[in-house]
Amino acid sequence: MNFSDTLHKNPVFDVIAQQADALGLRTYVIGGFVRDLVLGRPSKDIDVVCIGSGIALAEAVGNALRTNVSVFPNFGTAMLRAIQPGAIQPSVGLEGGAQGEEEWEVEFVGARKESYRSESRKPIVEDGTLEDDQNRRDFTINAMGISLNATAFGELLDPFDGLKDIKRKLIRTPLDPDITFSDDPLRMMRAIRFASQLSFDIEPDTFDSIVRMNERISIVSRERVTDELNKIILSPTPSYGFKLLYHAGLLERIFPELIALKGVETIEGKGHKDNFYHTLQVLDNIANRTEPNRYAGDAENELWLRWSALLHDIAKPATKRFDQKVGWSFHGHEDLGARWVPGIFRTMKLPLNEHMRFVQKLVRLHLRPIALTKEQITDSALRRLLIDAGDDLEGLMALCRADITSKNYERVQKHLRNFDRVERKLQDLEERDKLRSFQPVITGELIMETFGLPPSKEVGEIKSIMREAILDGLISNSLEAAYPFLLEEGRKRGLTAKTMSKAE
View: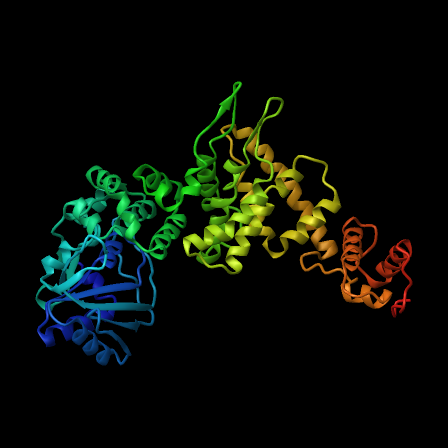
């Protein structure tokens, strides 16, 4: 198979070919770019391998393109960015083509062979041949190369039948999988990540090796493990990846809190749902939702919405109780789960910033909209939900819709119709009262100034009463309406106003 016509569509490959021939270096584009080229997937990262100095080739290409080159001498690599206005993404894939990026990130390295110590996934690197370089690749679909020299420009080099494995939708290691995974245990996560992203199977011998070698994941840094986990979470059907992690024995090593959700306990003929598989269904529902939302197309925000789905019931095992009359309950799991979120993020080396707080908020609030579908909806309850959710209401409602899981289709549709009713009422109330950025006009400072009080518990109590009165609709959130109410509350407490509002 020859890809010359496709590669010529992006001038950067012609420049690399010219400079490689000028330097007398056998040169190939290799790895993920070739895989995605065959699959017809857009890709902006190009890995170039040459038999010789990758740094020298990068500097020659950089000079020809008049672009800066970043050199990493300790790793023997160099990188540059090539901008091709109007470039078309090369794609002759088995699944059709796609228009790609105009900016390309190109990394250059000399061909190498690697050897490993058992206690580390950092290899000892030596210069090698193209065969050595392809042997060290993780999977057959990532070991394909395309020649960039003029004499064989565009020719595919596929020593491990990666093209055949793509057609069969199969993840397989080029060499003995036990050696592949022992050398670099992160490859076990990558195998499952690629299977989840591409909807591929893992070849049986390769999967059996992951099962045998799963304890080796302990030598991999948490950051690298979590990076692969995030990619699984963002895959089209993330439950597939998590089920593979579970059956491979990896999930209990990297995420034991999730494993604790698994199983059904039955007492006196009463059981509860398997919260592990329920959680995975909620995650898939989030991933495959069709309603318009502001997270679509924003991979970062989408990631945290999916993390909220993954963690929304995380504290159910710790709150599970059985009552002979009502059966199983998980009272307070939303509050306990929210308190667990920072610890889980810390362990996973996830950011302890606004993203963590977003997930924590959705875990804490995820039962609130559901409760509103089961009872007479009051404006007071809707106001509280609007204020507590704030700008994250859309994410919360998406999570709650996803949380409706049942084998009974009509039951699911009934709950979704109830959600439609709640959302319409929320929208109407928001348009009327503008509550997303709600701040009571009666502040703690105004209370202290009015009654001559120092900062105290009583000031907080009065402020809370004022807030509740506004939310209950007893008064509007205006100084004209709220200040007389404040004076009356002070009178009940034996307080005398020291100052008067301008509204008076």
